[in-house]
Amino acid sequence: MQRKHPRPKILIIDDVPANIGTLNETLKGDYDIYFAVSGAEGLRVAVALIPDLILLDIMMQEMDGFEVCRKLKSIEQTAHIPVIFVTAAVSHEEEARGLQCGAADYITKPISPPVVAIRVRNHLELIRRSRMLEALSEELARKNRQLQMLARMDGLTGLANRRFLDETLDSEVRRAQRCGTPLSLIMCDIDFFKRFNDRYGHQAGDDALRRIGALLQRVFQRGSDFPCRYGGEEFAVILPETGAEQASHLAEHLRRSMVEEGVPHAFSDVAACVTLSVGVVSATASEERTARWFLAQADAALYRSKDEGRNLTTAVVFDP
Image 1 (cartoon, rainbow, N blue to C red):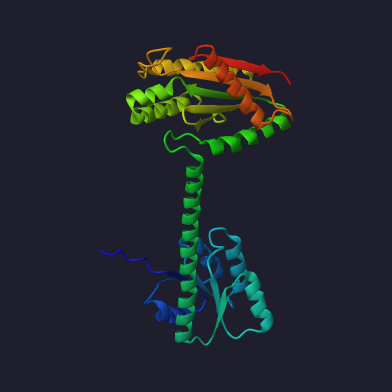
Image 2 (image 1 turned 90 degrees about the vertical axis):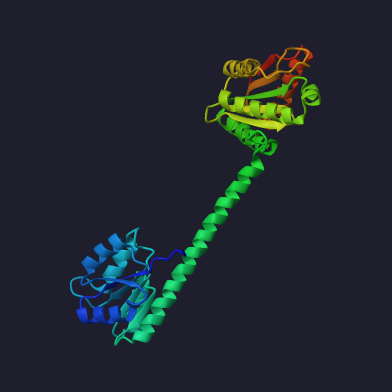
């Protein structure tokens, strides 16, 4: 069964019942009609109902249509609702005053039912198209955000990718330079991963990479921690506002946790399971210590771990 769209809601605000009756007879076949017989009542109904369109008389007792329109436009819930003044012929000055209050249009009395029907229909069609455009814009914005995230994420591990790492590291280094805070960077590499792939197959290699990605997310849970896949079997973690002692502890915790995962690797020279060689650099950022400098120092520490036997953590610390 095709779903029916709800009929548009129209609120008529007029203190003359005969005027309300005429408008109701003209519009009730296509719309749900509500009415109020004073400005104050109209404001209460408008806030409670949130109609699609308001037909508003200008000449009312106590609160005229200009004041009602100004109040409607000052209320967050009703500010977006189009208001059409229904009134006797007005001067150019009064017409300008109404438009300044936020009115969308005028319908003059005596009321012509065909004219009323056409103008109401046209305004509601504009509303429909505006809402459709807004919905499309929101959907496009959502999909753009998704695409931006996909462009920054590694599809295999779910971690940030190298591009996102470069952007974030550059930003964090500049922030650390401004604030004079320490910054640490961890880099790690799977030991003998080529042998693992050659012997167990690339599907098993992908599974191992996914497990390491999940491990990094478990170990580095602070909101500021930034683990990513650097490329191939290499991973990196940016640790803003993190000194040498804490960074070294986290790096070693990562290495030990990988051993505890117990992913079999019978062709490794250092253990019977998959292991990581880890390098970490900690420094107070300065003008000379750029993002590239941090990457180079962390990479050098990583290769020291490899040169000294693998399945090791090497930490280097630089004073300001």
